[in-house]
Image (cartoon, rainbow, N blue to C red; front, side):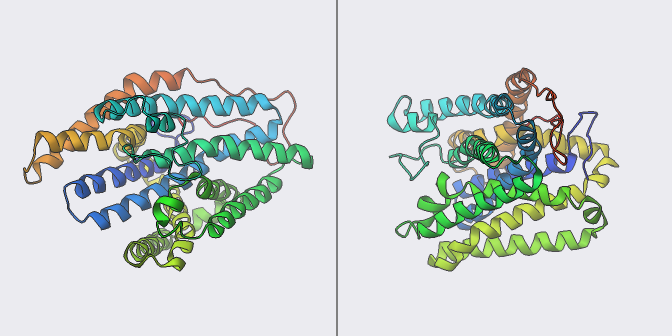
Length: 376
């Protein structure tokens, strides 16, 4: 299922393309919503794209988490966290500083909560949610700390470091978060802000990606034999189900829809990953498309971070101008900025990240002994 792109070991072109498409599926709906074009539908589309990001994060980080588990050494957890923080925090700080200075929020209490990823840890704490996309980044950052740390602690207590234990722990982790979310109710009527975008109620969304990796790793051959039409049909059905649930929540605040959406979002994200993996052989036969996917995947994080700022700048420069001119200017500015940012800011930091070293003793059977080469 996995394949390399352009000689970059460990890269999977299908997942790179999926990551890039998901980033655009957040940025473009926000652009249209900002200009008053189908705002409710645009919000639903961007929310679904975020669900894909969550599951994808858990999936691509699973090999490194399993490596930490197999090594049984805290220094591996330290390498994992440093790699994640070097990947995510510097670009986040640049974007946060930019939006805070433009919004005259620098050094405010809200800024400090964004800075520490605590603005939505247990509830929405900020007075002004002026960097709205940061909610999902807080979920990611706290997952990086909580999930592997608890997994290693549980493994030490149980004296187990095999994949079956990782599977049991992952299921238990996701069930615990889902139970807490159900017990929290509808957040006093504002389920989206009080539940869907709060860290302690959404950590399972990334955990499902970890479980997906374990499941697919056991049935690679079966997945490769699965017809593409079947995976595409499942993707369409799960996307439709998740979208309709969001529309139902927005329209009536239906409690059942609120309960079901996180699971539907996880199924949609999982289906998207399966489709991306199934498309990998076709992408390898189309180098131009594979390079496009690699580029979109590389700039996906800065696209997510900076698109709101650019939307406001373009709208301010071209007020009242009918599309498609503002859209064209937005896309040109977006790819120019994010391409330069990746090349001159992200890439040097990624190259400086620490690497995993093979443990002195072999890990238990069934655990990855070498971490994948990745830019995650």
